[in-house]
Amino acid sequence: MTNRIKIKTGIGFDAHRFSNDRPLVLGGIGIPHSKGLAGHSDADVLIHAIIDSLSGAALGVDIGTLFPDTDESYKGINSGVLLKKVVSLIKKEGFKIGNVDAEIILEEPRLRNYINEMRRKLAGILDVDLDDVTIKATTTEKMGFCGRKEGIAALAVCLLTRN
Image 1 (cartoon, rainbow, N blue to C red):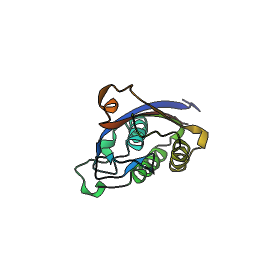
Image 2: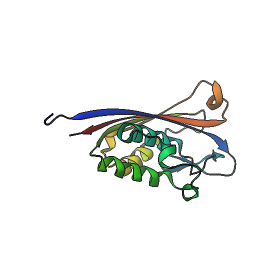
Image 3: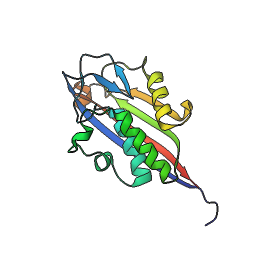
Image 4: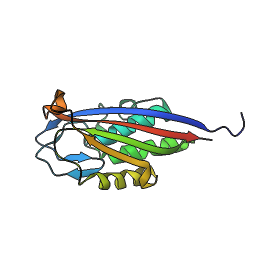
């Protein structure tokens, strides 16, 4: 097998319920809102979904395997730090990130004014061009836990290549 390029895709999902005593962090940035998300780390559902997509494709594991919520060293940690670790592990395996495409599922707050800042932040951590990171936001038309404003979910897919 000479000079074959291996292409892998990954998918990730995460969801967290709202919490009254935490700031809201999505895509590595603070979002003004009356509630944050509950979780062991900073509960950044977007970054957690991206970590799952990348680590599943490149390493065959999920975020809970890499960073278990039983490990106190991850309590309250900035999820961007975890994403940087995953990017490093992926590079050690010889993978290059082609792109990441993500969807945030929530009724509120509105994210239109924060999407580009999230993209810039994530592109820097992922070491990719800005146009290789896509983030969208959608509602569930008031259905389910996101629709009832109980929490936020996120989905992410990635494309990885390795020579």
